[in-house]
Amino acid sequence: DGGITQSPKYLFRKEGQNVTLSCEQNLNHDAMYWYRQDPGQGLRLIYYSQIVNDFQKGDIAEGYSVSREKKESFPLTVTSAQKNPTAFYLCASSMGQGAGETQYFGPGTRLLVL
Amino acid sequence: QKEVEQDPGPLSVPEGAIVSLNCTYSNSAFQYFMWYRQYSRKGPELLMYTYSSGNKEDGRFTAQVDKSSKYISLFIRDSQPSDSATYLCAMSATGSYIPTFGRGTSLIVHP
Image 1 (cartoon, helix red, strand yellow):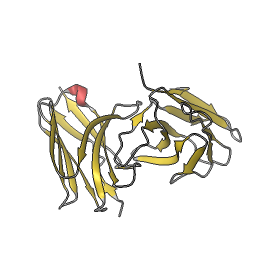
Image 2: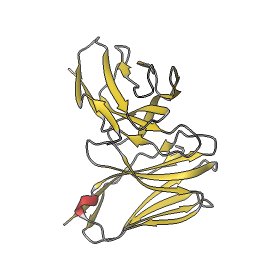
Image 3: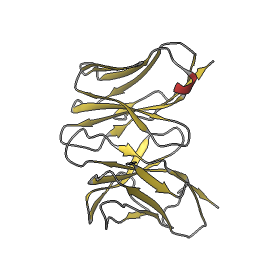
């Protein structure tokens, strides 16, 4: 089955700790995205990548970092500089070929602070 | 003013009702319009996709775009309890493949 997987489903972070969220896709998509979702709010773009070894900041990149070493993988690190990390994190992908593309989402990771 | 406005609800309706969900937007460059359904603690899934103005129907769902009024709607006929979810509208402009999302409307269909 083609799709996007995210792990873990739940993640707990201690103060001062960096944590990494995994996102893998087998849809052969070029573009991948990370969103943050807070209760009652829409999706806010953290980072996106149109191609391997290249990525751009979204609207709320501060306190986050990403890498794109493989087409299938786009991990997100929540650093200790992110002071309010508790949220639902969604990874998405799209073909990366033009405007109006459909994004396909993973099941999400819920990050909680201990 | 946000680029995309969507009433968060919740919208509570009885089973079998016709549901109308709406978004307004301010950016006249938006050409691609999408509706996603998100169940609690799950990722969004694409429901409807429309380019430019007009209507599109898929089973019990109809998406409508009125670009002159900068207004889009999603209608659900014969609503079912399984339709209870948050519905997110999203839209993007020509030349951009990153959509702008609404906040989502929470829908509750009670038996």
